[in-house]
Image (cartoon, rainbow, N blue to C red; front, side, top):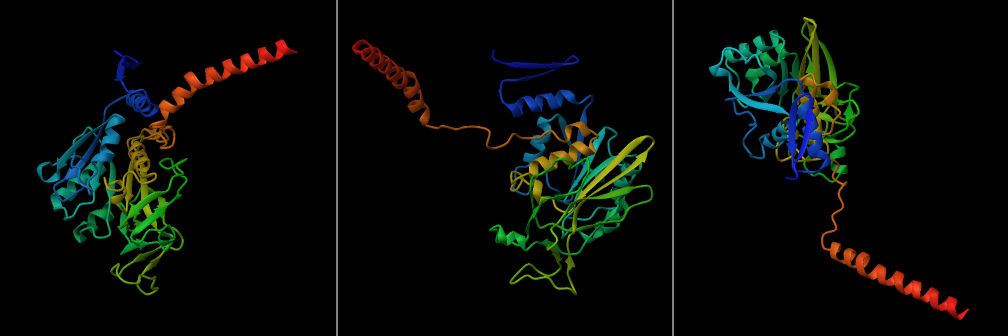
Length: 330
C-alpha cells in the first residue's frame, strides 16, 4: 500500500519513498540494459567497498548500488584472470606492492579490453611503479600543496580544492568544487594505440611538495614541481570497435567515507564510474539532489497551521462585517 511502481520494457522498480532522488535512482536502474559489475581488488590494504571506516569507500559504493551497479571483491592472488563479467576493475590505494603474478593478471585484463579505475597515492608502494608505467601513468614525486587552501580557512596544507576540469565526457557540465586530501600529481606515459586526457588539474599556484609537510611549507625551485599539475588522467583506445577506458586519480581520500560528502566529491566519483562503464547518457544524472531544495519548518508548522486555519478566516470574516456595517451607514 502506497508503493510507487515504475516499469520499463518488462522490468519493474518499486519504491515507497516519494522523492526526486529515489525516483531518479529507480529510473537509473531501469535504464541499464544489462548488469554492471564493479570489481574491487583486495588483499593489499586497499580501501574496502564494504567496511565503514573513515578510510574506506562504503558510502560511495552505496551510492553506486542505488544506481544499479553490482559490487564484488576479488583477491588477485587467488585468480589467474579477472572475471569476464567485470565492467570496471577498481584498484583503490593499495598499501603493499603486487606480486608479479598479480600484476600480470591486471595487464591481461587490460589486454582483453577491460576498463580500469585506479586510485594512486603520494606514498604508493615503489613496487607498483612498473605496473603503473605499463598501465600508462607515472606519479609526480611529492604531495600537492595549494596556497589558496589557507585563504579558504583550511589549516592543513594537504587539502586542495579543485574546479579545473577538462572538456571531457566524464566531466562535461560538472561545475562543483571537489576536495582532495594528500593528492599526487600524474604524468601520462601513453602506451601505443592509446589517447590520454588530463581530466582534472590543480591550480596554477599549486606545487608538488617533496619534503615533509611540517613547519613553514613553501615552494622550492630545486626540489618541487610547480602547477598546474594533473590530478586525474583519462586514457582510452578503440579495440575491435569497442572503446576501452581507464581513469587514474592521484587520490583516494576524496571518495573515502570521511570526505565523500564534501561539495561535489560524490557526484564526481559516480561520474567516473558511469563513464568507465560506457553509460555516457547517465554521466550527467546527479547522484544526489541539491541540499537546499527542502524547507524544514521544524516547530513552525503549528503556528502556520493555526494562522491559516483560524486567524486568517476570522480576520476575513471581521473585515467583511466591517465593510457591510460601513455600507449600511452610508
